[in-house]
Image 1 (cartoon, rainbow, N blue to C red):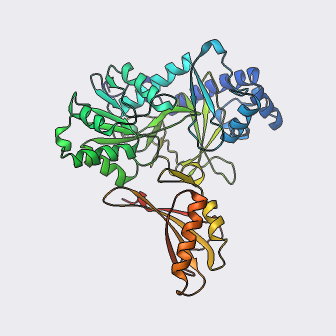
Image 2 (image 1 turned 180 degrees about the horizontal axis):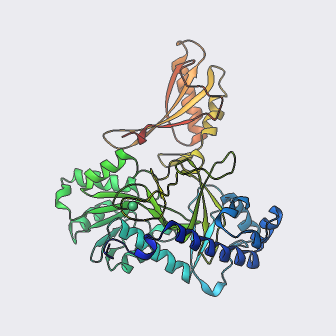
Image 3 (image 1 turned 45 degrees about the vertical axis):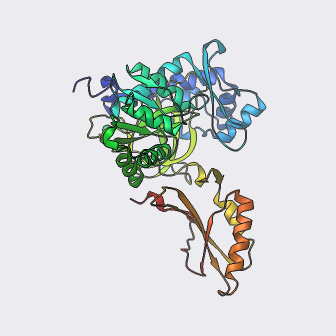
Length: 441
Ligand SMILES: [Zn+2]
């Protein structure tokens, strides 16, 4: 293999044992400094009866309590503005990036000078892995400013020797113009924005064949690993489309697909990835689905030890056909943030639908939130399906009242389908409240 295929060949093709040794060494360094400098971690470890000397390898992490986003939020409210886990001295701070949550106070994340450097290198590595090369014209349609994705991909594009157009997540018409002149070769943005640009080009009569664009990587929301969405983006823009993953609290890009499109490769030299069964809190076996828990191995400012992401994924160490040895999550991120539904700009949870549905005597207790995508417009359609206990006579009136109550609760109006009692599936385990039909190819 030559350097043309790998950005960091000595790291990307490291044996599994060498990766593990490096992780263990970096983890010991991280735990030592967190327990020496952070009251947040000192209290947490003391409560669990764990000392720095107890953490010798990554396997010992299973006993360490996880860190949740709510905990970080509470910590920053109690100890404003950054909590007591910043660790790195203020003279080393370079950037502030708050999380983009909709509830509660955003969690502030700091990057030190070394963190910016590591983030730039890992982002450059992921971009290289899906095919960005020196001389590419990168149209960066990720939002600039406080959101983590815009700045990091910009730095990485420059690092790779590319020509970067920092257009950000707006101006669909201008996006289309730049694709023709100077002729961007790489597009970075969210999957839904990519679909929107493709739709705009189609309306304007621009064929994908006229565009020099050859590839794109799409993140910030799920979708690219969904076959139907990937196909629509690829056909609509005439490119190869790749998925990548990041989180404000961890890093903008620390997992991305390679040209094999065989799952997200994790940057395991900087991040230790666990897949945890949320019921037992024990690690899942290779290939089993669980919650992603991430530990910063090299982060200086605001290091996370066992950050509970609330995102579901699988993890496989089998070597990828590309030759990289870093583990992958095949199928990408399989479920995000406690089943939050995002519909027409509003965000809501199944428990809110439950609250409304169960306030009706005429309705059964079962309900389902069905997400579908309209073929023509790619618009999402959310339908609340529930069951009627009485006959058909009052159904029209019932639908109308239900729609009004749901609109008040959810701040958005879903479609409603009322089925005869007994139609929906019953389970004694955890009920599946969201049926996402958009993920079917
Ligand atoms: Zn690969």
